[in-house]
Image (cartoon, rainbow, N blue to C red; front, side, top):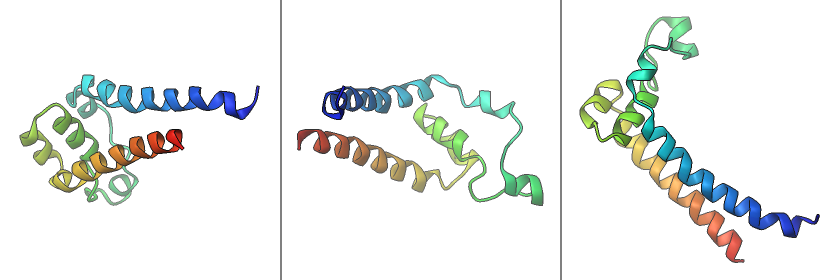
Length: 101
């Protein structure tokens, strides 16, 4: 099997992944992560929050439409979430452009 015949499967597989991951994350409640011990190395060594602490829960809260909780988890979410959205759209755009050429 040549790499040319694999290309359509990779393209469609990546597009499916790009769309199912956000949908799957929307189904995960942010409260589920509260029960898990944080894996932040900075927090575990210095016993204080790093600038990124709570960002995963904050992003999940924004995806659920709960901006108040998101801001409580980490206020930098107002910068990070739009940036993640931009990177997400650019990744899909790059895949489509690569496929068309």
